[in-house]
Amino acid sequence: MAHQSQARTRRRALKRIAVSIGLGMAGGTLPMHAGAQDPYPSKPIKLVVAYAAGGGTDVAARIFAESLSRVLGSPVIVENKVGASGNIGGDFVAKAPADGYTLLFGAMANLAINPYLYKDMSYAPERDFAPIAQVFDTNHVVVAGPMSKLTSFKQMVSEAKANPGKLTYASAGAGSSTHVVAEMVAQATGIKMVHVPYRGNGPALVDVMSGQVDLMFDQVPNSTAFVASRKVNALAVTSAKRLPAMPDVPTVGELGYPQLEISSWTGLFGPARLPASVVSTLNDATNKALADPETRAKLEKAGAIPTQSTPQAMAKLLQGDSKRFGALVQKAGIKAD
Image (cartoon, rainbow, N blue to C red; front, top):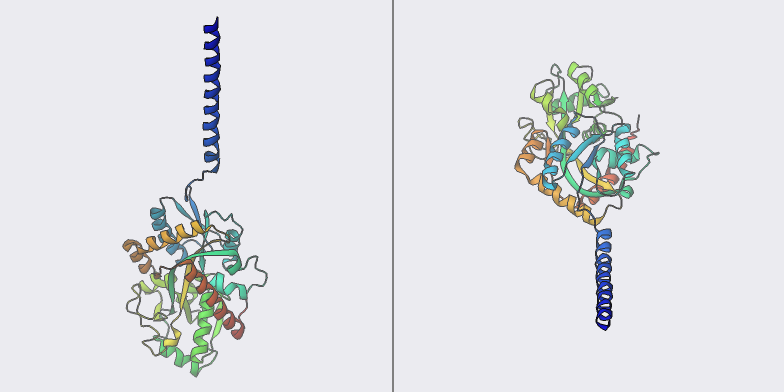
């Protein structure tokens, strides 16, 4: 009897030990499981382009997204959110969760210029976005129709000075970079031209090709194919050196106007309060994607100049250009449609 009693006591003791060990293991594993997070990125990333599919910005975004997908090992899907000169796309990203899965392919026009044109914008770029990296620069090209009498930049300036207010120029819309750059050229050269705003690059270029409008100060990616096919004549590019996409087109510096070297940037942004670790991951991946020789060649062929940078450099560029273009918009009296 004593032997059986001792055996039962040992069994109860062993059972208590087993239960204690089980609870201890559960207590050790449950908090670890509850606190674990999936590594970033663990699902597809949405890259919002605030301009129409098929345009220069969209084409460059898709080249970049393909390379970024390879570096991150996760799909980066371009989604076009078009309207209000880029404000709809910006608003969508500004209101998105700050988790790194909704990003903005932000352009100088809708982030540095639009705040001075649209007083009722739902977001403030410097407050509501987290800069991640600059992706590329684009320059502008002065184009005229194939049958135009204007065959050089200097001739265009001379013609405009001899007949103030006679030459017309098209833009993608009031306040667009194609409008602002034209005003910068007019102020720097002392000429007066008539602005003809359109709703987008496509209709504007069509009327330049047909001769309905004399000129356009277009972004290079939008006009590259038309220059190559001779549907428009390129008079000058606003770059510091000749562009791979348009090697035969002279720069404004070559023509005696170095002050007209103008570029428009495009960068990668996320919603404000994006975790620093996510910003760091995306910045590193962006720079690696842009260092890829094949990606660089594709972007340059499309008229974009890949530019590696830091989040701090992108923030500084946005801040500086906001002040610069704000002053220009006010001086020129530029207003939105």
